[in-house]
Amino acid sequence: MAQIGGSVLRGVADALFPPVCMVCAVPVADARTLCTPCWGAAHLIGGTVCDGCGTPMPLSLGRGESIHCDTCRAGGTPWDRGRAAAYYAESARALVLALKHGDRPDIARALGHWMTRAAADLLPETDAIVPIPLHWRRFMSRRYNQSAELSRAMARESGVLHAPDMLRRMRPTEMQRARSAAARARNVEGVFAVPPHMHRAVRGQRILLVDDVLTTGATLSDATRALRAAGASQVNVVVFARVEANRDR
Image (cartoon, rainbow, N blue to C red; front, side):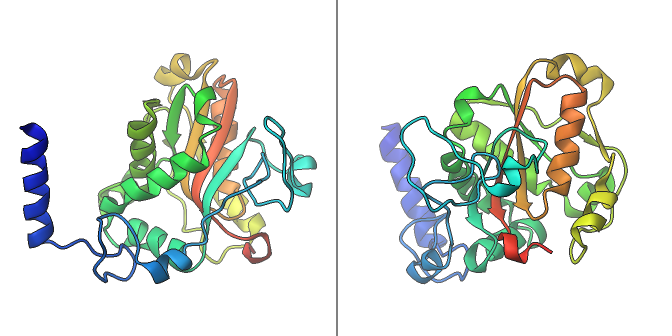
């Protein structure tokens, strides 16, 4: 009876509010999905990827094998392993902007689902999922933290502990947009910290750090260093979208 009642309610909701594409708003069969053209422009990442940053690699690996890109082999990131669900272009870019600046936290569930799939091999070695925090001033103006919405969706789907209070942004920062890699790093240097009362909860834990976009990695790098300083035994990262290497400056 409960299933029948749920089906009826969904039917009524679809009749009153027909599902539309999350990008272009044309009618689609199911909610929280994309139309065919927007799917074609989604640039989802699949296949073999760098184990350190999630960038696609033109190789085929055997089960249990991993590979690193030149940047990660040279020690380019302070975190252990990284994944991304899509490239920051076309549909994926539109989804990020809608979530971040378009007052669309409702789409986080779908984006979080794609991130959960991208991070499927990281989740079994994760004790807690932690989002990149907003400063309270920006949180008050935006009314939600887009990274926390994504991490919450991942936690619900995976069953892993969601720990949005493990990390704190200690001061407000300027927007990273249009800054060089060096300027981005300076802008967020030392901005994250684990609150003293959370040190015991972080110590020895394997953390999956969540953000919406990876550009130069400055934000995730500073957050990783803060978690390690508090005693985290492992820090992996996952983002919804990553900027292609030749576009990240």
